[in-house]
Length: 166
Image (cartoon, rainbow, N blue to C red; front, side, top):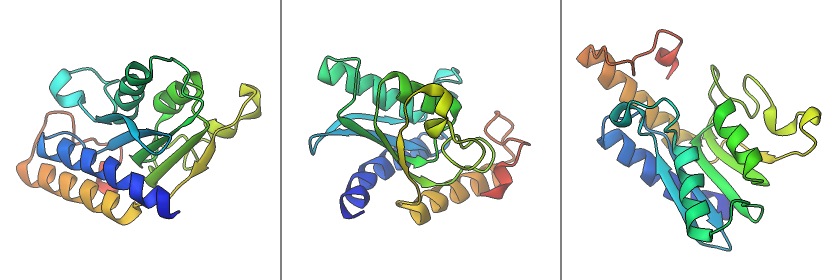
């Protein structure tokens, strides 16, 4: 868990960048052989694309950095439990392990709502470790949604589907 906390620190830096940019503060990194090969943070607000999630952006950069579409020797670190789309992307990239911070009780696809990485129908599994850097991940999410509520922002980031849980 010591190494996991170290690498999660880089994902938390990405989440802080997202926060500073007015994005939901989720950050992710892809680690290969003791080095970060991909970084990302949510960009859905700026880009207008709902699939610009931190995890997808980090994996995209890792593919470019390694020159390989298969990331079978990498670990994906995310500050918040990945959604179905992001877990699906990790499966397609052949990522063997996902480490995340805070659980996502509405859309979490590793263990909270679904357990996609371990669905036997997929023919392979991803090892999942949750709760690494959980407190800081939650703090960022809580601060973000508190700010959004106090601003009365109606730009779509303030969801009616349970974002207030943070």
